[in-house]
Length: 356
Ligand SMILES: O=C(O)CCC(=O)C(=O)O
Ligand SMILES: [Fe+2]
Image 1: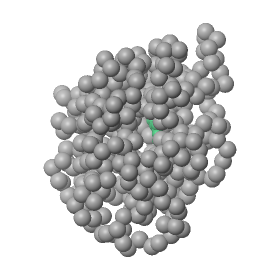
Image 2 (image 1 turned 90 degrees about the vertical axis):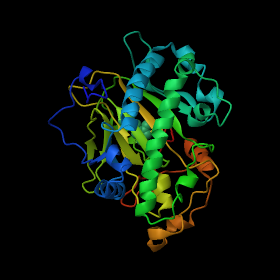
Image 3 (image 1 turned 45 degrees about the horizontal axis):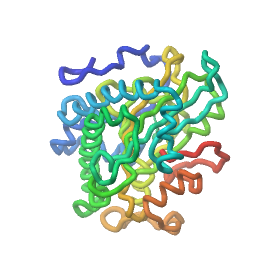
Image 4 (image 1 turned 180 degrees about the horizontal axis):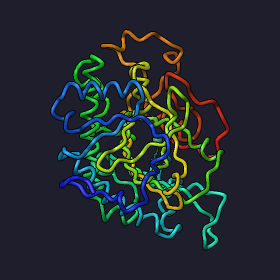
């Protein structure tokens, strides 16, 4: 259980193992960011440069507690959604709806107790549908039924993201709103809520490698209940598990922020693998809010503040494209992600390409 304001469900699962090395994420208090606490703001900026991943402590902030409660509700909804017959979920498959939004499956090489091929599944629901920026795409009845929960979650996540964007502008010494005006909630963007489900599956080196990625967008707010998320430690290069903390989200920075800041900020490589014992043997869900620059925004380094002091590199010579084009090209495997300044991914064959 969390504090008086939140009731989390992590205690319903076997505990995260105590004997494994975990990723060194610092914890940043949303409430302190809201009140403009300078030391907290600096810690947030340092984490954004150094690791690109941190815990965002939501308890103690009414916005944060609304996010935790929303996430718990959506966690139940996603579990119900994924239990629906495959044929029903597939009615909302991306192939039928949109290149990027909708339901998607990745079939595994193993079968369940009923002889059905197991699958990892995602369901992307776009922010613009909830905010009213677009005619909503067809969606599963469970989404329609829980529209207001999803909408509130979108609004809350965006409020937290906008706050963090404001702190970044200050530390980067950019004019006020320099980043905010590229991320207006009322403008069309690739922002979305994602339901994620991974079937129970044995460890596979190949699957683990294929799952390595950086997120494309701006800031990602991640809620998970079981271990399984790993990040590659920038110094040791070791893959280490991130421990879920009840009442906190895991936040990470995406490639767009690295591009905008010419490498000042970090987008760290991560992946999802089967949880370590005693959390193995369970279906794993996570709930993700991905923020992206507005569709029409051209991805290139911004001018101003500390960014002007960054050296020009070959990355500045890469062809420019809009956020919308970037997403589309990444989703068909046309472009590699990873603008991480230290270490990157090697090019490799991929069976299933996804934009995270
Ligand atoms: O499920 C998780 O814990 C992380 C998911 C993730 O990294 C992604 O969907 O981009
Ligand atoms: Fe990710």
